[in-house]
Image 1 (cartoon, one colour):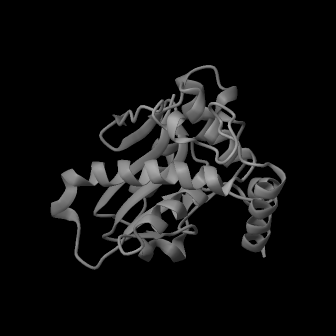
Image 2 (image 1 turned 90 degrees about the horizontal axis):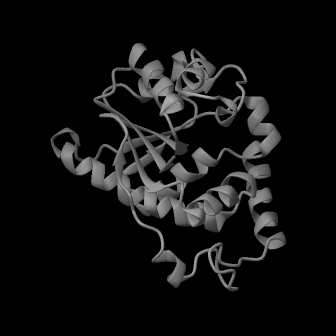
Image 3 (image 1 turned 90 degrees about the vertical axis):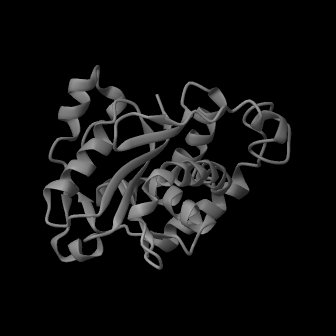
Length: 226
């Protein structure tokens, strides 16, 4: 029922908010070909496990993420998902020895609490993961229930420094016991929209690593980095 409601919100949102380019405001699409050239793909490895694709300081990128996060825009999700898909494939070039034929790579979106998901109507990280999988359905599988967020936390942007961000999300996720078999021995990529200090992705990765799932490879990917 929640997924149906989410889809309806996306459809209505696309109808209510006519598409104009977030860069130059010309009509037709959220990102025109000219403004697309103003986005520099800035593949950045925040840590050995966490990487991001686009610079959040670019206003066009920020606006696309805003449309995806707060308006549920399908077009914004597809645009950002295409960048994320390219970045993930680039990162996996160094891991070819670990990729098993006919075994899909798992995309695991950073989860929201049930209450937060219900309030917003969708999880933008989940929508981004689905957009990546749509680009290469033979290579990727989206799993949404293996990790849960177990309590609400203040927004990360409200934290003043890295230490506060780390403490804000500490112990707020858990691996769902009956779903652990979905991750055992697999390549798992945790997906989020934006990473700044890497606190949220680090916490999800750490939660998985401390469990009994034992993925073959565990990475965190964000569309943009601050």
